[in-house]
Length: 90
Image (cartoon, rainbow, N blue to C red; front, side):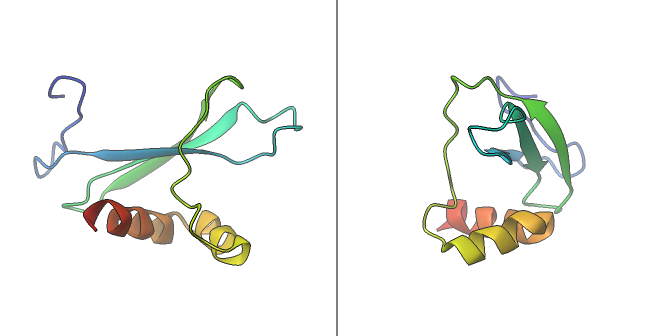
């Protein structure tokens, strides 16, 4: 770790992360979110379910997508990470 930034142990690149909610607000599971962390340099990534309180608003990096495109990306972690990398590199 470098300050509050994580650094990839394999290649020294800054690790990126993204959290998103998987369930709608009316669901009892709304506070369970998916957290992804990845190294854009060596393409290693991990994902986990994490707790995010209802009061926390998460940034939605997928707002520019149609509902169909969004649903497809959320089913494939590798494709989602590729999309997020393109968003932050542009």
